[in-house]
Length: 616
Image (cartoon, rainbow, N blue to C red):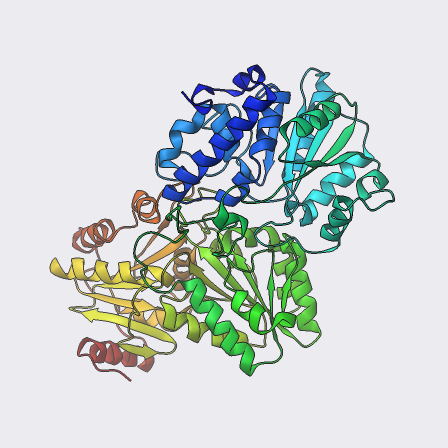
């Protein structure tokens, strides 16, 4: 029996010798390479924290001592040591282990900490609560990666930790020189000086914090000694641990195949992905198109918050290294800095995950939109992302950002539309624009049958029963709905408005001629595109009923994108069933409204042309 098989909880670690713990570290690395290669996930970060996590769980007594991980993608070893190794066969799959700490999984997980730079604030609150309640028999430990220390919230927390009354709090700084990409900025330079042993007081000591290190993060005994010293101090202390991201696996150590952070299922021998490619991704299309635009527009620069490769900006950085700005994990600064770039005569393109734009809402609203700055936002991973769990679904952006005055929002349905809409967005100089697209392949282009007043007509068959307004990458699902309802004798028109905000006025004329309008979006139904169109139709005195299909107002468990969408009722069969029931029900409108003007007649003529395959 291997040592790993005997570990059902952290208590077992305190029974092992230092030599046995080192053997255990090797077994854990082999286990991670095997399991994560099969499932996909954050392999590199976890290979780098094996010894550190062993030392933490052998010195501290979780769950009595509270351990926090920032970010939580480095918690796989923590899960193994807290009795969850058996769950790795279904890592990040429905019903299996989450890729981040999950309080529903284990008492050893305090928070689902998957957005960076938050752990120190949690830890400060926990330490203050213990002091308030007179609790002195447990420790608070926050493990924060050096990349997460580039976020402003981490420094807000440090300011309060250092400036408040002494409270026992251990901050383990996992310094591996990388977040998603090499850590940037003055703080990264300072850590480099500390690693090199340059003399002089360090930043943490100048702030009034005790400092231990740097410590070799792959020497279990050395890390244990530093943690024991930190545990016995009365006040906050920083333990600076130097680790190597991806340690012990050739493909993650050299990062030659871009495997240093997260991987898809791959062959552990070659490092190459398994399974067939299903075409270019939205991300890669954006990466190609932004380079093409930059070639024509010298004023265009790109901004990223530590996500150079994941957001597709690497080609532009390679082509124009002086025109790509990486600010670290600092979305708020990125957005207001982009406003300043625009103010200075530059057109910035801010590429960010949809889930992370929430963090910069105030800056987008007050610093960009209020001043009508021409900044283009590109939101990758919008809608349901699936396997990364509830915090990484980009399902709130269109709900939150539609309230921003003057912001134009586009949702391309395929690669061709992404290229077209990105060009239009960067060409708009009267205020901010935003393009949002999902994770994964673009799929085949969905051709336009006809275009009228900026709205693409994708399908027209039968009587004018249901108008299907498709939003973004769910256009394929909308077309399948039309096919299914037509098989039941219900006519359908499928349109893609391209720009979903502001609402195109022509939608009112189209809706007026149909018996039912439905919207299909990969976003929260609450305050989503469907809700906004419904309000617009009411304001336009259109009496045609509308049904919104989108994501319910709840946090979604991890699983495949298809499974999560299905769980939300976003399948062609489910939507079509509802449409047929609405059209056939006793309360359905027997007649459509009469046309109100010549424009409405033109819309009808266009739709008839589309039904015959004619285009403008």
